[in-house]
Image (cartoon, rainbow, N blue to C red; front, side, top):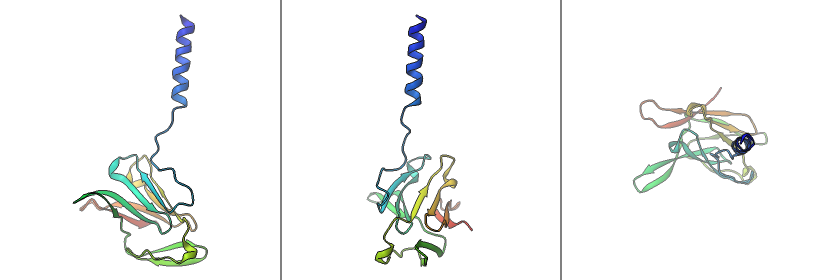
Length: 145
């Protein structure tokens, strides 16, 4: 009887150890332009990122169902897109030269709250932090100095 209980305990222990983690990111090739990421905070924080230009969209409920709403940047930000070239990106501008069409941005979400969500330029290290407007509850990005 002790052997049976010991065997069952081992099976349960190892099945827990090797169970898969839940994934909040889609599995896409490193070279892909688009990716969907969901924060552990829930469906409200489901994002689509354009990894070429750093534009992030939030999944929201629109008049005709679900839609992707761009998350604005606070004013203008200097972004380092590729090589040694700096460009200004103003909210709404999405025009890039052909030689800059490669993944440059990564979205990081933490399980410790939405305030620990970051957008990182993988070439320059420029980092933006996600904020929530306390009056409108809308999200926006602000550069970490």
